[in-house]
Length: 163
Length: 182
Image 1 (cartoon, rainbow over the protein chains, first blue to last red):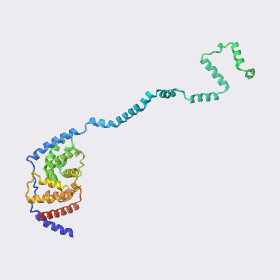
Image 2 (tube, rainbow over the protein chains, first blue to last red; image 1 turned 180 degrees about the vertical axis):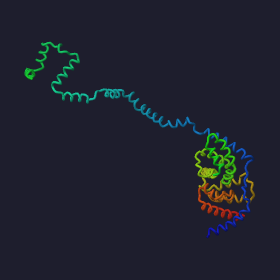
Image 3 (cartoon, chains in turn green, cyan; image 1 turned 135 degrees about the horizontal axis):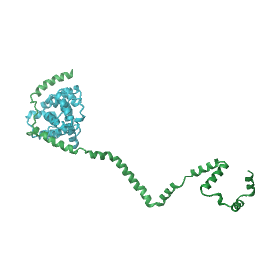
Image 4 (cartoon, chains in turn red, purple; image 1 turned 90 degrees about the horizontal axis):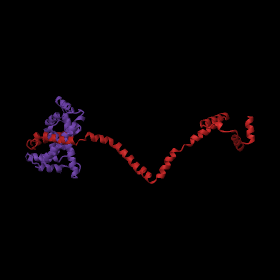
């Protein structure tokens, strides 16, 4: 109810307010609205020139990748190059270690030999001597007897002939 | 939305018709928006700056206009926001309290070479400057521009009820100021 009374009062007050001319009492410079469009056009042209160019956009997209590449190059320069210059022995050792055959190859070879039976072993041995160009004909009887007498006992020879 | 405005928006969104359509838009709305801004800022120079900013913003963001409101409402909303942003920047520069630019506006009014009113009109303007920012906006839009509450509601993003109450309080304060300063 109170707000209605106030609004009624306001209507009376507005009649007093209406005594004042309602139009805006401000003016504008001559031909202001005629020229405004042209001035705005100049402003827009300037704004368009300030817009980012496509070339800049490409650089903006590539910037992170370029930054990352530059970081790696910097790390390389700061770490690898000083080591190479001041500690050449250390790098040589590191490189040499890469060319040493891993122990696992030797281990595999020994395992394979253990799994062979005796006949297969001697056959393989014969093959390898042939492959290496060593033929039996190169040994004469005297050399063979000499080798056996110095490396093998009589008992071992006896055992081999029994088998 | 009116058909003319709809056509204008369509042309504004197409690259080949954009420049010409924008020129038409400026010619169509420049005076209405000028006076809307001038009532908020009072100074012609400030109004000219803000009117240009408004149209530059319209140019840049026309592609994002979703046509949920009328072109007229959208333009008034941009103009109002630009004017308030301008006043806020003045507050920041002169270290004024956040809701107090009345001194700055009073100076503008007193030194305005384009003020053409009589003493009573000057008093009315001074009375309006005593109002808080929101009430000042509502009073100007309702009293001088005779805008509908529904349109004001869309522009200021405020309910019609709140706007009516705001106008009611504003009118009361203006009346009191005029009576007390006779």
